[in-house]
Length: 180
Image 1 (cartoon, rainbow, N blue to C red):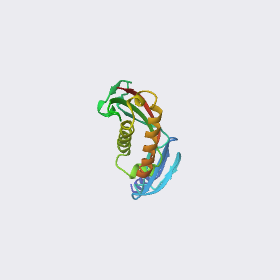
Image 2: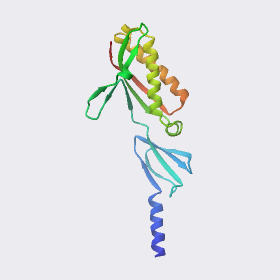
Image 3: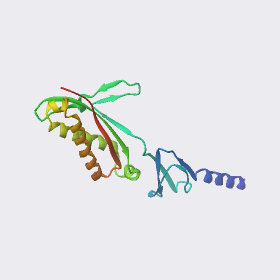
Image 4: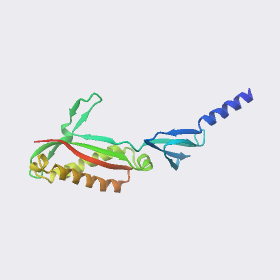
């Protein structure tokens, strides 16, 4: 019985020593709660029985934030007036929908710098969108100034994200729809 228990314990140790990381992920390894390594895709070894823990993070996947609307799994679009309604610099009200792409640039900062980095990014984007639209005219928001607004928002958000160090990088900001 003792030999069977020892063999079973050895099998459990060996089974918990290996882990795989997908090609779109990186793994953050913690030893007794302290970050000790970041591993790339492939098969890897770790210390068993909870000494080292693996936290996998999707770093090579473009993720999205929709401002002013939401799209469910079936493709049904629902508008969100509280996010899209903004006032322009010439005191007109416009509804502007934005589509934002981002990705995780630093898995350690993403996991440990804040509780909810996506919420921080969404609030930051909403703030900067309102800032830029609030300093633009209604004509530029609705017609020819869309590219300029997109670039300004992207530059402002990217510079603030570098200061916050939450492990996210802004990839693209697009105006989906703008209407008076």
